[in-house]
Image 1 (spheres, rainbow, N blue to C red):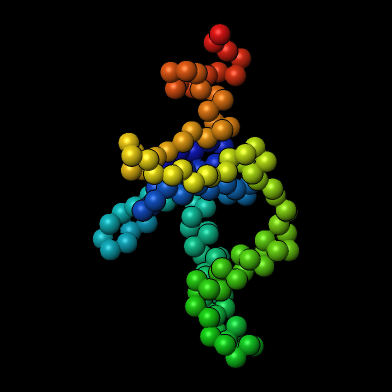
Image 2 (image 1 turned 180 degrees about the vertical axis):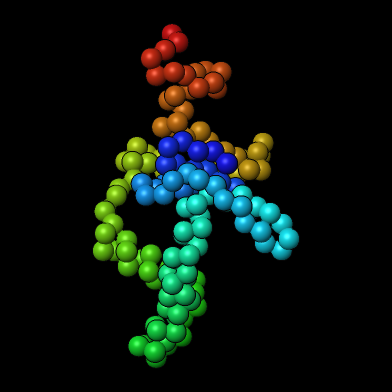
Length: 141
């Protein structure tokens, strides 16, 4: 466990990163299945108070079915939620790759190569004659 002021990194099955302005970084002992384990106080408080959120998340597909008359899987519900959040709060982003000519071209098969390839027009400008990447400030002449 790593602690620094109110930032805690704790490992249960996976690394868990916690940040709190309320909780101290105290650690307590918890015995579960005859194993003693040290946990931060913030984890204990989270587990005591956030159970209702998990229960609500379990009931959301039921509520969707009740209001719309259609059933939905948990994955479909989450995907629909993500799409609506992006639609409401997302910003239109354009890809710089398309502006800078990173387009794929068909390279016809020749007698020498069964799977021919070609260097990207944009990326090849950052390489020298030996195929090594060049620093933008250093140009070999």
